[in-house]
Length: 558
Image (cartoon, rainbow, N blue to C red; front, top):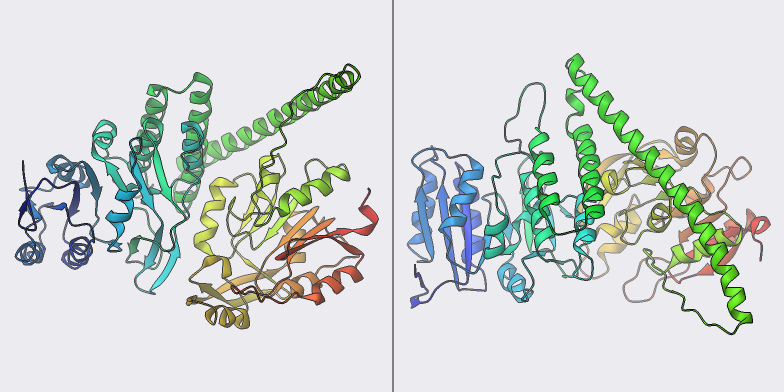
């Protein structure tokens, strides 16, 4: 089937499917975004799922009168959302395909940028994304999983299951791959199931390095609410179809048996945690629900304990291997035998701070230090504690931004994660959410300073609960300060450091931001932090310009 694009007889390269139902205003916004795409060789397929609102058809007819790339279908009866999504896909003729929901928005270059990122192996391209809460006009970046062409399929699926991101469903697909992987999507979390299949059977490109978000997921409510396929009075979602389909998909893939077992475990554990989060308000409705929560919490605890035991056993085995290798190395030196060694080191921090801190802990013979990460931001990206978590350490992560906090619940599930702020007094404070989330702060002065630099803006100000660090240590660490304190709270670092009772309990190592914000390289070093910590018995071990690493003088052993 050939369509006419801008008056030229030409088969469209990209098909855009718009399933819609009773949302004339949202449909108008979507059609405005899609018809204004800079890439022009597209077809736009609108499927009206038997809307009651007559304005839906009127909106489509209005746009059709100006753009002959739009094709309109009205269903005779409501087919359900899943069937409507499948209908627009089957009607498409382009080599590439994307869905466009009637409550979202796209930048004009969305298709052009995504299309340019395809190569012969790519099956899905996902650009940088954000959330828009329309009632408050608050925007938040959607944190995408660490998916890369350089990773194996198993590593990419693991990253996605650690941070399942349904919005990736609205990327640009190679249609052939999509048709091969698309199945019955009429169950909860079906979008995540499809994305898992795509990751297992193809190659996904995530454009995290873009300067701005090209896709905006619109939220008409004051908070994000997941859309249930079949909500009931005693539960929100149904999890078994998703779990069974995921297990079936994993075992049907070409990966090895060992990796299949690991991914099935990951599917089960992440689904258990999703259950605890989404169903929490239904927990005490009846005895059966309370039993389900007890069973799921028991299984998660059992799994965590088994993982801990397995890591300990691997650690013991690793130590034995290291001792044996040292022995062999010494023998090799005597026999003039050379062996290759791997000197690569992975860092998650901004400037390698985690590797420096690890070196100190190794030197003072602490292999799995505990930690508290104040202003944690992200489970891995720019994280000073991710390396220690992956090496078996556990601790406390504190992130006051509710959107950023979500990623910790799955990616750092064995840590204690707190969605609060930290200050020198308990209560509530204005929290300034900046257009660049790494700059979020409780400091009005710091927020205003950010707006003076480049294009940063204060997106919103919200009253947020704050607690003093001594209360957190008492409530979550049994009164004993963790070994490592990572502190980055944009302007309030000194106040928090001064609130610690160093005589009672204090960290062995502190990593704190000691440079004022500047994108022109003119940041000023905060000597007051350095002087204060030196007065408390710490010494400066290293400085990465942005952060300074302190260690207790009496604990440092060369």
